[in-house]
Length: 112
Ligand code: 5GP
Image 1 (cartoon, rainbow, N blue to C red):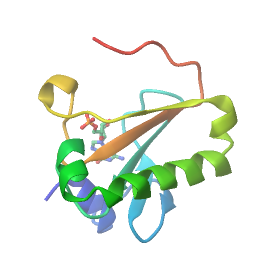
Image 2 (image 1 turned 90 degrees about the horizontal axis):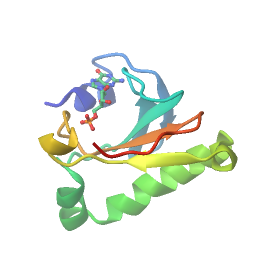
Image 3 (image 1 turned 135 degrees about the vertical axis):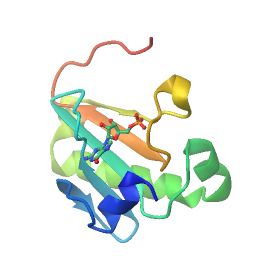
Protein backbone atom coordinates (compact mmCIF):
# COMPACT_ATOMS: atom_id res chain seq x y z
CA UNK A 1 0.00 0.00 0.00
CA UNK A 2 1.41 3.42 -0.93
CA UNK A 3 1.84 6.26 1.50
CA UNK A 4 -0.85 8.17 -0.41
CA UNK A 5 -3.37 5.36 0.13
CA UNK A 6 -2.70 5.76 3.85
CA UNK A 7 -3.47 9.46 3.53
CA UNK A 8 -6.72 8.65 1.69
CA UNK A 9 -7.63 6.19 4.45
CA UNK A 10 -6.67 8.75 7.15
CA UNK A 11 -4.14 6.29 8.57
CA UNK A 12 -1.46 8.98 8.51
CA UNK A 13 -2.05 12.71 8.88
CA UNK A 14 -1.84 15.24 6.07
CA UNK A 15 -2.99 18.80 5.58
CA UNK A 16 -5.88 18.18 3.20
CA UNK A 17 -6.86 21.25 1.17
CA UNK A 18 -9.37 19.80 -1.30
CA UNK A 19 -11.51 16.69 -1.52
CA UNK A 20 -14.41 15.43 -3.55
CA UNK A 21 -15.80 11.99 -4.44
CA UNK A 22 -12.79 11.13 -6.63
CA UNK A 23 -9.94 13.45 -5.78
CA UNK A 24 -7.84 14.28 -2.75
CA UNK A 25 -5.33 17.14 -2.51
CA UNK A 26 -2.93 17.80 0.36
CA UNK A 27 0.19 19.81 1.15
CA UNK A 28 3.48 18.16 0.18
CA UNK A 29 5.50 17.25 3.27
CA UNK A 30 8.69 18.57 1.62
CA UNK A 31 7.50 21.69 -0.19
CA UNK A 32 9.52 22.78 -3.24
CA UNK A 33 7.70 26.11 -3.56
CA UNK A 34 5.74 28.49 -1.32
CA UNK A 35 2.64 26.53 -2.29
CA UNK A 36 3.12 22.84 -3.09
CA UNK A 37 0.03 20.67 -3.21
CA UNK A 38 -0.27 17.03 -4.32
CA UNK A 39 -3.40 16.03 -6.27
CA UNK A 40 -4.29 12.36 -6.52
CA UNK A 41 -7.17 10.29 -7.79
CA UNK A 42 -8.53 8.03 -5.06
CA UNK A 43 -8.51 5.06 -7.45
CA UNK A 44 -4.84 4.09 -7.60
CA UNK A 45 -2.72 3.79 -10.72
CA UNK A 46 1.06 3.76 -10.64
CA UNK A 47 1.85 6.56 -13.09
CA UNK A 48 0.42 8.93 -15.70
CA UNK A 49 0.69 6.41 -18.55
CA UNK A 50 -1.13 3.70 -16.65
CA UNK A 51 -3.79 6.23 -15.68
CA UNK A 52 -4.16 7.52 -19.26
CA UNK A 53 -4.53 4.04 -20.74
CA UNK A 54 -6.61 2.35 -18.04
CA UNK A 55 -8.68 5.20 -16.58
CA UNK A 56 -8.61 8.15 -19.01
CA UNK A 57 -11.66 9.69 -17.32
CA UNK A 58 -9.46 10.32 -14.28
CA UNK A 59 -7.47 12.92 -16.22
CA UNK A 60 -10.39 15.30 -16.52
CA UNK A 61 -11.42 14.59 -12.94
CA UNK A 62 -7.93 15.52 -11.67
CA UNK A 63 -7.65 18.63 -13.84
CA UNK A 64 -11.17 19.77 -13.00
CA UNK A 65 -10.19 19.58 -9.33
CA UNK A 66 -6.99 21.55 -9.97
CA UNK A 67 -8.99 24.13 -11.88
CA UNK A 68 -11.60 24.43 -9.11
CA UNK A 69 -8.95 24.69 -6.40
CA UNK A 70 -6.70 27.20 -8.18
CA UNK A 71 -9.67 29.40 -9.03
CA UNK A 72 -11.01 29.33 -5.47
CA UNK A 73 -7.56 30.13 -4.01
CA UNK A 74 -6.78 32.90 -6.51
CA UNK A 75 -3.80 30.98 -7.88
CA UNK A 76 -5.01 31.27 -11.46
CA UNK A 77 -4.20 34.99 -11.30
CA UNK A 78 -0.80 34.46 -9.65
CA UNK A 79 0.27 31.62 -11.93
CA UNK A 80 1.02 28.00 -11.17
CA UNK A 81 2.73 24.90 -12.54
CA UNK A 82 1.53 21.28 -12.63
CA UNK A 83 4.13 18.49 -12.79
CA UNK A 84 3.90 14.71 -12.80
CA UNK A 85 6.93 12.42 -12.64
CA UNK A 86 7.07 8.97 -14.26
CA UNK A 87 9.86 6.67 -13.13
CA UNK A 88 12.89 7.00 -10.95
CA UNK A 89 14.93 9.03 -13.47
CA UNK A 90 12.23 11.69 -13.37
CA UNK A 91 12.23 11.61 -9.58
CA UNK A 92 9.11 9.55 -8.95
CA UNK A 93 9.25 8.19 -5.41
CA UNK A 94 5.59 7.39 -4.75
CA UNK A 95 3.95 4.98 -7.19
CA UNK A 96 0.43 6.29 -6.91
CA UNK A 97 -0.07 8.73 -9.80
CA UNK A 98 0.09 12.29 -8.51
CA UNK A 99 0.29 15.83 -9.77
CA UNK A 100 2.41 18.48 -8.07
CA UNK A 101 0.80 21.92 -8.02
CA UNK A 102 3.50 24.56 -7.48
CA UNK A 103 2.69 28.21 -6.93
CA UNK A 104 2.93 31.17 -4.57
CA UNK A 105 6.23 32.53 -5.89
CA UNK A 106 8.15 33.09 -9.10
CA UNK A 107 9.20 29.60 -10.15
CA UNK A 108 12.58 28.78 -11.69
CA UNK A 109 13.07 26.93 -14.94
CA UNK A 110 12.86 23.17 -14.64
CA UNK A 111 14.99 20.33 -15.99
CA UNK A 112 18.06 18.64 -14.65
P1 5GP B 1 7.40 12.21 -6.50
O1 5GP B 1 8.83 12.40 -6.07
O2 5GP B 1 7.01 10.75 -6.48
O3 5GP B 1 7.06 12.90 -7.78
O4 5GP B 1 6.56 12.97 -5.42
C1 5GP B 1 6.22 12.41 -4.19
C2 5GP B 1 5.98 13.56 -3.25
O5 5GP B 1 5.31 13.08 -2.12
C3 5GP B 1 7.26 14.24 -2.77
O6 5GP B 1 7.26 15.59 -3.16
C4 5GP B 1 7.23 14.03 -1.26
O7 5GP B 1 7.70 15.15 -0.56
C5 5GP B 1 5.75 13.77 -1.00
N1 5GP B 1 5.52 12.92 0.15
C6 5GP B 1 6.13 11.73 0.42
N2 5GP B 1 5.65 11.20 1.56
C7 5GP B 1 4.70 12.07 2.01
C8 5GP B 1 3.85 12.06 3.17
O8 5GP B 1 3.85 11.16 4.00
N3 5GP B 1 3.01 13.13 3.31
C9 5GP B 1 2.97 14.14 2.40
N4 5GP B 1 2.10 15.14 2.64
N5 5GP B 1 3.75 14.18 1.30
C10 5GP B 1 4.62 13.16 1.11
